[in-house]
Image (tube, rainbow, N blue to C red; front, side, top):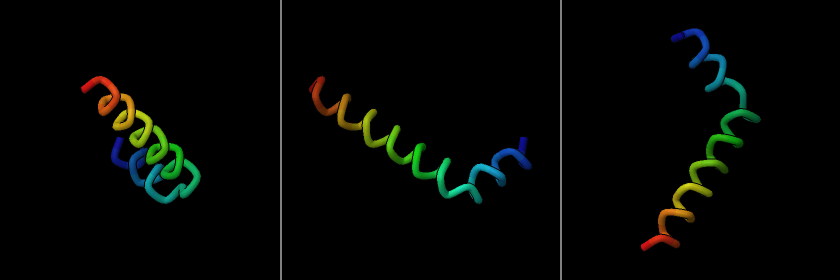
Length: 33
């Protein structure tokens, strides 16, 4: 598991996708308020 996390952290493409996903989630939550 730890090895997988390390791999994800070193993959800038995956990190960008995660950040984009988090941004979408935050925008969705804000629209609900």
